[in-house]
Length: 413
Image (cartoon, rainbow, N blue to C red; front, side, top):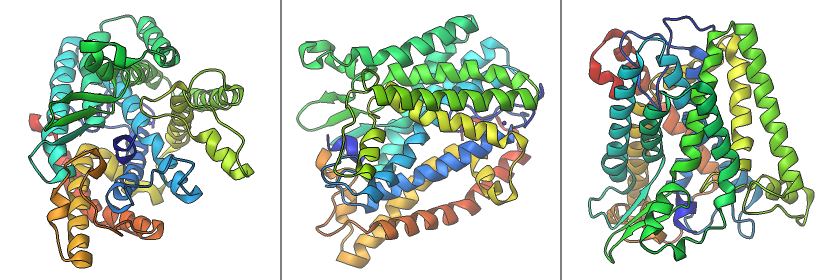
């Protein structure tokens, strides 16, 4: 967020998983491998959000001129999160089709998508900034997921081969649009920010709205996830085999295309002052919007993880499985928890809390940091672990609650 501001076990017919971050249709069973991957990824995502609130806003982790190797990789490992959410959103929709008719699934995707957009603009904006002045609004992942789900509601009526074709063409080809200069589009500039180029969607001198999750590439990943969901009709061995080979192929494609450096990312890699920094440059692909190489780099490991956990959930990772069953619950609440921790830290260190409620411009997002605010990476990692530990009992309670109840509204919480 701050970087943008500055610049499954064997599947049976009765099984399904959450759509988007958490949409569990009533009376549906779950695929543990998908829940586990989702739980691991969302827990990892919390690391980046702790860094957003407790790190130094003036230092961008992917700016090779100012970052450190440790800070870069702290940011880089969390890159896997957003692509995984979108991929699993589409995959989950395909699995849910086994229990819903297409008309019912269409209505569910539309209502679910609209709900996520509402959460983004109202609930999550307050979680990030603790104010209602709407001077600065940065639209992030729930916005993208919401639109992707609503568009998927139409795509599911197409033949699978056509959905796959649309997804591949958009993922591979959208970087060909990078040369379009939005400043020449006039009144159409906000639309281009909505579709492909992150930037200002609205500004009137008092309020500014910035979109960071654009539609074209993220809708494409969701569509490919929907097509991928078909392999869960196969037996475990065949499914695992396909997931591993898809993951390896995607990862090799990233290495080869990045090495050739002719297409797929707007920023080329360069030889740096040491081999380690050259690797950093090689891995420093573009997330806003997610380039072809960024998606290959992140989706390959996701597919490998899905394949690796086809044999079952290791006992050590079962807490992540619980989190993966209630990801939207975790997502919303952990932002409030982190911001409250930042408010408490501001009071203890500086004797004030008003700064944690102020975000007057993009340079002070998600809140205004006092001088000397940024914590060392070691402290950030400790705070991340603390957030996971504090969130787990709540997730455990809510997962058990959802397991006992079949109320319709639980599909939206």
